[in-house]
Amino acid sequence: MSKQVLVIGGSYFAGRVFSMLATREAGYSLTLVNRGRFSMTHLPNVEEYKCDRHDPEGIASLPLGHFDAVVDFCAYEAGDCRGLLERLPCQFDRYILLSTADVYDRSIRTGKDENTPLLTQCPPCDAGMYMYNKMLLEGEARDACAARGVKLTILRPAFIYGPYNYAPRESWYVEKIVKGTPVPVPEDSDGRFQFVYVKDVANAIIACIGHEQAELSAYNLAGPEILTYRKYMEILAEVSDIPFTTVPVTVEQALRERIPLPFPLTAEEDELYDGSMITRQLGLSYTPFSEGLQRTYTAFKGVYTPR
Image (tube, one colour):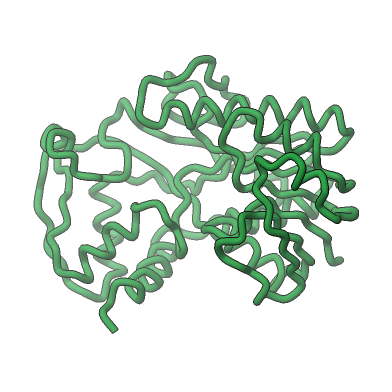
């Protein structure tokens, strides 16, 4: 059955892929509210309103009706969830918040599931404020949804990868390969990490919209494969159709020279999660990492190959 979905954001990376998948494969009708930088009206059954979520009058005056769900891709700052949910003039049954797996207590490094304690203070790292704000926004969402009498689903993804990713992670590697630049590899790194393919994130949202069992739940989104830099490079070499060279570096050298290696370098930074609950409850299947990276490599190779 077709669903009516209001999307906050919806034109970048995960939001873009969700919009494409929801309209073309799930047959949903989407109403997108964003700043209008990248239009998605070329997709079927898409209506767009140009409005900044921080404009209270603009949000309150949107000509909206009833929706099966509101999906929020771009809540980052304190007050974003509360302000939106208090001002939206429409009626809706469920609010889906894209959070992050980084909301968990940083002292617990492995096997974090949905019952793991959350942060209680801002971590002393570069992304600490982002993590702490996401934790606070989850609390905002719970309170605001309770006040409006709507269901809440929180999704906590690990590293999202895939086509359209604007974060310089997998694209950083593909650009070096295409341009023939040696790829630095931290030979003494013992950091471990997990990924979730962007299409799996989109499918998770669709599953939450369509299943009543998702009521008042938070779900981790993390593929079961645990990677290291060594394993990542092995898979990258397998999917690349261009031979490339690597240059060994140490963790200390990478930090000193500010080489922008995008994943945890040390065991103290491990980011390991249990993403199985959404599989058990809602039937989500995770894309094997080698398959997802192959698609990602192909997409970004086209971006960086001279025309």
